[in-house]
Every structure is written in C-alpha cells, then in structure tokens.
Image 1 (tube, rainbow, N blue to C red):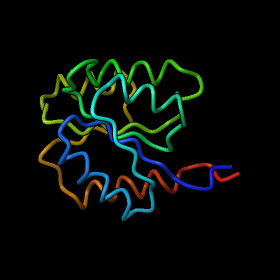
Image 2 (image 1 turned 120 degrees about the horizontal axis):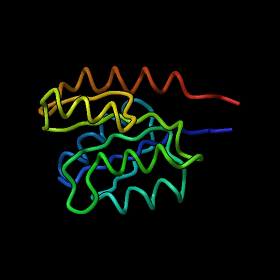
Image 3 (image 1 turned 90 degrees about the vertical axis):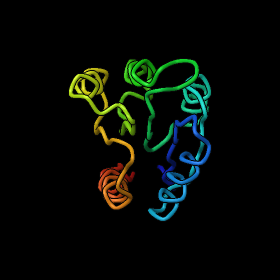
Length: 128
C-alpha cells in the first residue's frame, strides 16, 4: 500500500525544481528533487515515485531518454510522467508522447495548470 504520494522532480535549475516541489507539497506530495537524469533514474529505482515531473534539457541524460528508461523498467513503467520543458515545438511534444510521457507542459508554466495535473494524477493513484 502506498501511504504517501511522492513526486520526483527532475529539473537541473535548482530554483524551478524547488518551485515545482513547493506546488507538489501543496497537493500533498512528498517532494524529491533530482538535478540530472542519472540521479533521477537512481532515485526512481531506490524508491518508486508516485509521479515524475521531467525536464528535457538535463546536463547528462536528456529527458526523453530518462522517460524511455522509466517506461522500459517494469517496476516503473506505470508511473505517470509529466514533461515540463521550455521546448514547445510540435516535434518535441510528439517526441514526448513517443517516449511515453502522460502530459507535456511548457515553460514558463501556469501554476494552476500544474496543480490541476498533479491533483488529477494523485486521484488516479492506486490505493490498496
């Protein structure tokens, strides 16, 4: 049984990471930061997050690859992933869908929209 919701925020900009984390906490999530792709993958394996907010432009492994790796891991494949990126072209959004992201939000993001998505996916979490 998952007695708490945890959100892994994968974002190399520390301030944006903390800002998203603050919104996550308002929605009842435990906030877990990762500033690069390798840390994100390690953290996700250490403790399965309820949800992932994922930037695409990371200093090591890009967000598309992080998304693919999470989706190809049977323990993590069902975790909702919301891409939050400054990349706003249709091509990038298409790539986001192809790598398995549930949602694609662009920066600068609308806090109300982000909170609405967090709440929507929080309600969808299985409660055993």
